[in-house]
Image (cartoon, rainbow, N blue to C red; front, side, top):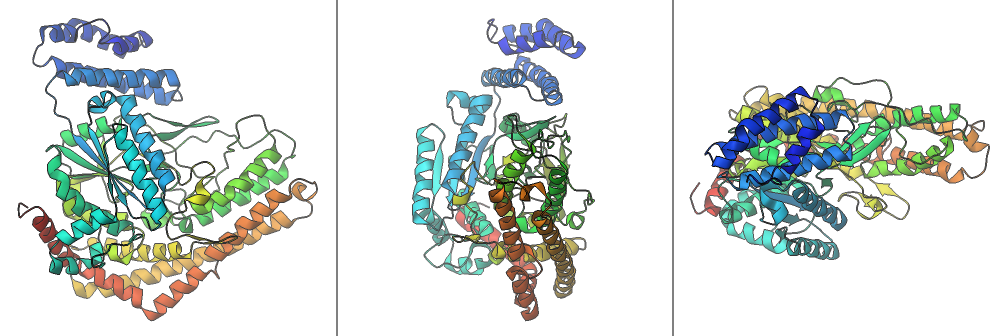
Length: 621
């Protein structure tokens, strides 16, 4: 413990910041008090050492964030964390074990990227001795694939991860069927609104919420294999253990947050039951609700390009400092209590080498089609460092791609799962806020969200998006979004009263119908705006006086942008198939009735769910 190399990185920190008074005070405290206590093996010495390391890391991480996350600071940071793990391993600190749960459907490339990132995180920071392979993390891959060949690839990837000392368990159809059969048949039938009604055969593409609920039941059956201090972390396969940062003109993805250590400390020092993080990088919403902002920004981009000389140096590298999370990518931020920022956002060019305005125009035209995969080229979300990594705030939304629960959190199922709608996480969040209040929190622990991998997104569209040879149909996703919004804001209005614990069923139909009318009016207004903005883009592109129509070699880029406009108009315009379908559903009233029925059934679903948990745990709950 007291050898000269044990505290090598801590000494590097003292040397790097020797002129900083706070660092000098830490160095004096370490040499005068902490190191002698460690040498004597004082009972409190390891705790004092941990406290000192954490204060040093607090200073280092603030400096790294303030100065562009340069690599020497990050290397020192990771070295100090691994060094701290050595201190903790020599003392009686019981750390949390983590079960990382990854739902995936037909996206093996994303899963491989995710598992590689997880392995990199554990190696870099060494949580719980992970760098030495002691296994503080176990992975469960919950497969909802519909394509047998993709399912086979996903299973193989999980097996390869286990072979590489990252324990990963594949839970395919057989495993899911097994756990559902373990639920008493009569109870299983009554729970069909949460876990589906599939009989003895479980299909693929059950939907994210149904798949997560089945995963809850499966995990309950396996919890006896893990230590008492175990946390369950649900993460989407299209995420990485990194953050996207911006300083000046440079954008980069960095491994900066020691996620497992921070979560261990937060849960170890409080009685919270559910913690949600967020994401940076690509927005976590469907293109259906961010098309207006991108069209607005595209008009501004084309106006800027038109006013510049095509062979001049690129003008799209301005410094726009990142801001705390504001959902600025969302067309309808007012619904969520955020102030709408009316001005368009400037495009930040993705090219790094010396290039011209025309090069940027060509690159933008190629990137525009990535919007339909979930990118937002002008409103990427960046990480903003908070000085206190342990700070939490009471939450109202569960980001289902990044949330952590205790074992007891398995009681909080994804509600109304059988409807297959979007916004399940925000809806669950409203219910949790009402039911457990301060035990449901948010922390500044975003993961890097990547809707695409370079050159790969054409092969791994999300389920529900239909791609033909020369067409793209996002109407199903659009419809699910509309009714998901109706569900969410109906529940939000009801929880402002006494729902769900004191449910006035007579109030539900009126609340849903009123919400539906409001959301439908808003959607139609926005789709009218979409039509107008697409027309403006087309006029700009068609203008014979623009330089892109006066020279050769630009034809492909112009075609790309016209193609983008066509897909946007067919999917999101005022005459789109999605709006026609929603209009028909409103007229029939079927979806409205389904939502009313589902909201009214929550209390009974909750009772049946707890009964199922008790049955699967042998009556111990």
